[in-house]
Length: 87
Image (cartoon, rainbow, N blue to C red; front, side, top):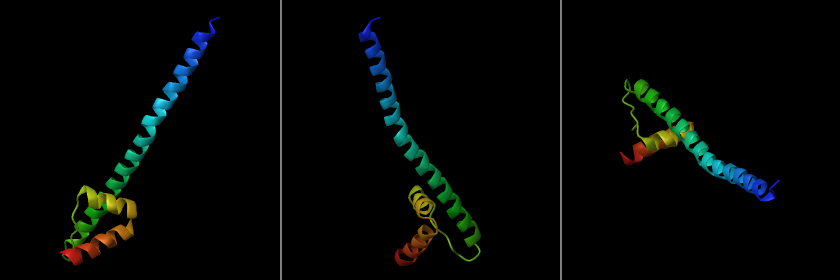
């Protein structure tokens, strides 16, 4: 039995595990960010749909969708206050 071959296989398996781990962790954060952006976009779209009758409208772009997706209701309030102050 060749011990060098066993050590090489063990090293290769450990290296494969580390590379897979390095690739999957950032992918998990990317999926989480995309999920929050989608939820935020749906919330802004719904607010714009309901607010068209009273003249309320928020910009729907990736930055605002991410802001609302990550912050939730305070994100909507922040966008409303910024819109009133700057626009």
